[in-house]
Image (cartoon, rainbow, N blue to C red):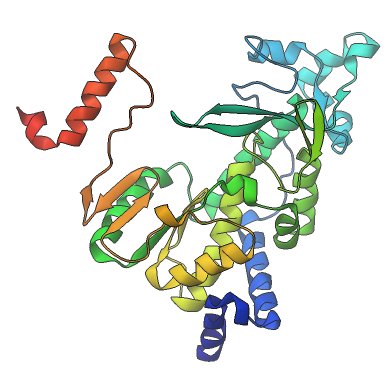
Length: 343
């Protein structure tokens, strides 16, 4: 145990990492991923999200609109149409239509779009074909349950992470790591390397291999983007497995590890090693928002300095109606502190 611990610490200096040690580490991560995922779901029921799909745009994005149009899919998941869709009421309704309209439309992939991120920039997302995204969301639900069973409940973790960040800013025993553009930097090969074969095949079939941008189709080297219905859960599984294995080697256990998408909390002594490994695997830690020393910690929208909430007020747009002015006033009162609230 001590020998293994000492050997693994060499990974902190990525350039001196011996390949046999790294392969051993990846085998352990793969085993952890398999443990978190469990078996494939026995069945998948389509889930309709609130947003657009490849063909459902504008105001015509309600569930009735989506169920009334022809489903669209990429080429690989032909089995959705043959073995799953037509076992649903939606599929049976499609079969009752004319022969032409009963066939799914096959497209190369998703289409690129953007949504506002803040006042200065937009966030890139991809709009998936309707049949793909319905079953991506179904897989995402399954992954969320698997993560909860593995002790990483996404439904609770935002508030938990804020509490842990506040505690860590006082005690200094935990480090917080933020990954930049996490979904855009999880590569196809990394997912193939770490996931069990059957799970990889399922997710690979449901992903879009190309993105349409300004009339051109671009092959994707990232595995999936924001807009894919399982992206957030998948990246959480991968980062959780990486963090747990590092923590077991260096800290002795993984009890204090918690992961919410690209927000990671680990014991402080794991900070440098985990950062180096994330970079080695093609990921991009946000150094400006990652903290392993000092009295400040940040995670899931919580900013704490020695236990004090120092989260500033963000004004993302000019107030334009009574509700937005009230929201602004409440934000000012929150930042001003309890003295203002008590007046």
